[in-house]
Length: 368
Ligand SMILES: *Cc1c(COP(=O)(O)O)cnc(C)c1O
Image (cartoon, rainbow, N blue to C red):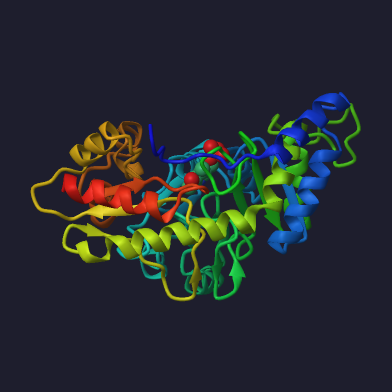
């Protein structure tokens, strides 16, 4: 593949950091995790940061720590990676979907308010593709109805909404470091919060429910092994150092795409950045608008010509598991479905040049 869809940005510094951990003999529960957490909390601007084994496990722990119970309703979006809805099911709670805003592809305050019932306990917002939801409006609704906010910021590290960072609006925010995210630890995640109880609970839960002082023999709650290992943490610290650079590069690449696609607005819809937002570009997603052209055909032809692309994202409520469990049907969330039908992610990673982007755009337009 000449242009893969995504590629981690790994340099000698990362390789040396991981080798240093391997040489140290401490491969888990050690100083690298502490250092990564401290650096991450500082950057996020939160009091606490708790490293975990993935974004999914991080979200799971925040819901346990927040006291979500069987039968509770949690409002969330169908236009997301499946994990954000699955974690609600881990709690035997009910994900209540709201349709998305057609410009930002994020959930919006108005739709959320319509779905609030006596059973609603929390709003699990997902900041999709690298920009936050309208957190001013959503925070006001949460306050009015006394609901918790948990932020799935897995795709939106460092994104800002009126100057405030993703992950810092709610009770807790969760980031993910899978290899295609803006920074990676291989597998990994981070929970940030300003709430001491949330942090203490997550630390205990990720480590088999051990008492907060980590004494060997007392397990105070039902816990898990959701820990991050030391190699991943060392890798994460190095990736964090170059995160500003990586994001600036991604923002530059996104601008190139938008500029070179601009003359073809009747064929391709380019992504929009909502008011007050700083976008940090997890993926660059366009919609295929041309009548009679199927997105999947475009994707196949791009792939055949060495350009990676993927449908970002299928709507969660139409996955067979969700259809079977909840009886969802096509038509239930028309905006989400319409974006899912037409959306296409294009290659986005540090190292792409403007020449590359011009070449990708030229190929895409010739296919259309
Ligand atoms: C990546 C991602 C996650 C978490 O993914 P993991 O693979 O578990 O780290 C959760 N939600 C969204 C929206 C994501 O994009």
